[in-house]
Length: 75
Image (tube, rainbow, N blue to C red; front, side):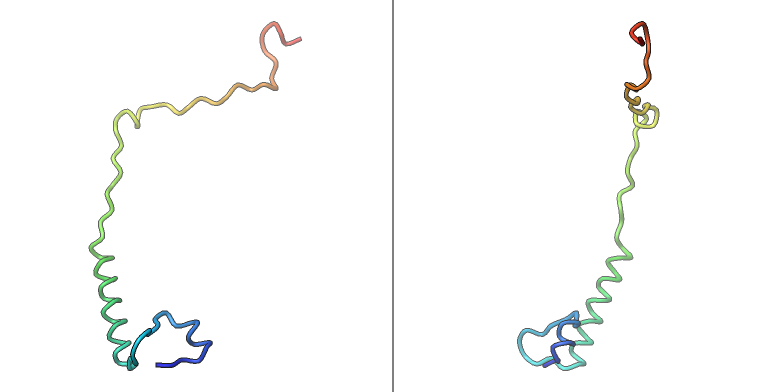
């Protein structure tokens, strides 16, 4: 199978050996597409578990503001 240079650069599938017919390429694409669709349907993502500690914990406090004077040393 030989494609022009522009089509070869844009083709998602390249035949490296032999001469595949368009029907053979369509069969390969159909099998791979079906396999990916089946894998997508059966894929399961683990739900992240959150402990009671993480739910009730406070966030880290913000830093001290150095631009606001405080105490006796305010000048």
